[in-house]
Image 1: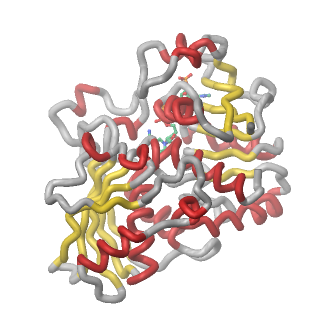
Image 2 (image 1 turned 180 degrees about the vertical axis):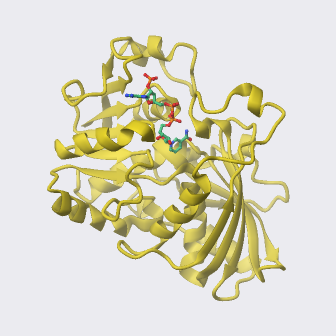
Length: 345
Ligand SMILES: NC(=O)c1ccc[n+]([C@@H]2O[C@H](COP(=O)([O-])OP(=O)(O)OC[C@H]3O[C@@H](n4cnc5c(N)ncnc54)[C@H](OP(=O)(O)O)[C@@H]3O)[C@@H](O)[C@H]2O)c1
């Protein structure tokens, strides 16, 4: 078994890591780490009543370690669910010390030599890892996964981009409150409300999507415009997507292309790979977050309402994905599984 440490283990994404890794066939949890607030406490005490997912009681007795190289030394790889404000330096310290770090933070995503990996979409970007080690002289490396919205969007765009090309994409999001972290949005602000602003999210969707759909050193060349909104669902980001494709494509062709899509994680039968990365629903009122977010154990994205768009002379559809699973911890774990089969860890 490969020993793993979870940094930021007590937060929303950290708890999801803990839940997904507990019965993992290849990875064992050897360290859970937190901030000064939690270090030294038992995991159950540190979380208190701030549960973001179901966890078995045996994990509650683990001691939360401080987030330092000295304390997190009983691990082969690192899963980081740290806030971006501190992830930059901490993740670099671990990579320099020889660890492969799977990061959920935005700090390193746009560095030229750091892959933003979503393995069904851009497995070939693992080539950047050697370049990163060479340029920085590190024995370890940082591998990021996309921001939650981009992880879901880029998976739905991949088969369309490959087969028909994309000239422009317009995206309007309805993002769950768990996407902002445990202390993210005060309840008084979000109950009975929609907040039409998520800091830096529109830029992340644009920049990360173009990097992921490009080749390792060249970003994809199409226009993206996004508008992001926080809504009062707990988990599951829903996005309305409007596309102008390079080659004409009917809704039927788009549905067939998405429905047939499968990637390397499916071929390799990786433990966290969903059987179908994209599930297309035919019902006129799906996907819905409460009903559909756990499709493929939260690792599939669910597409619906594929239809013609008269204005862009293209197509439009709705896509849903689980933000803390495909959009965060689940994607990171899939990245680690992918790298293990490619002999990087
Ligand atoms: N939520 C999502 O859907 C989502 C999706 C994709 C990516 N992300 C990214 O994932 C990361 C974690 O997000 P989250 O939603 O899980 O946030 P969160 O609920 O606020 O959790 C933050 C975690 O970081 C720890 N932490 C905070 N300050 C620290 C410090 N100075 N030193 C060490 N640990 C510290 C916290 O520990 P204590 O409990 O001990 O304070 C907690 O475990 C962020 O970078 C976020 O942007 C989140």
